[in-house]
Image (cartoon, rainbow, N blue to C red):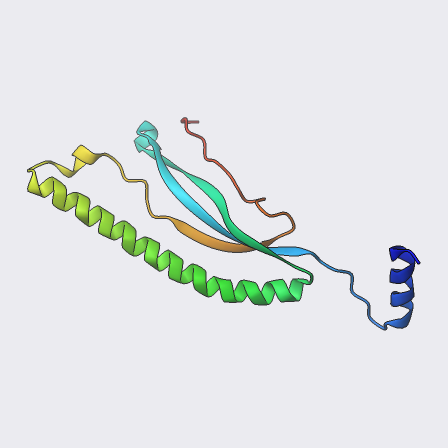
Length: 133
């Protein structure tokens, strides 16, 4: 018996058959960058896949996504704190040397994490433009 025949026989027996969704829960990291001084300054973002897991059903994936959202909130708080600490350390470094903080130039910004459901892992990957448009 072929797989197609087996599936047909299965669907004849079951009242409410559900084909697999094959959906991924994906964790992404978004890193900002300072692009340049044009128009008062502009920034961009690079987005990269950190990890993913495939699930057979959307219900399973959505349940796991809710759990991972708690992790994302923790990661974003940590990223915000780390960015603030980095800025403070850089300001203290400038003050210790009697330098104006502008000596260091513009900051990129804090990293941001997010979770999403997707059919293809990495579909949210992107690299921001490195030139003013």
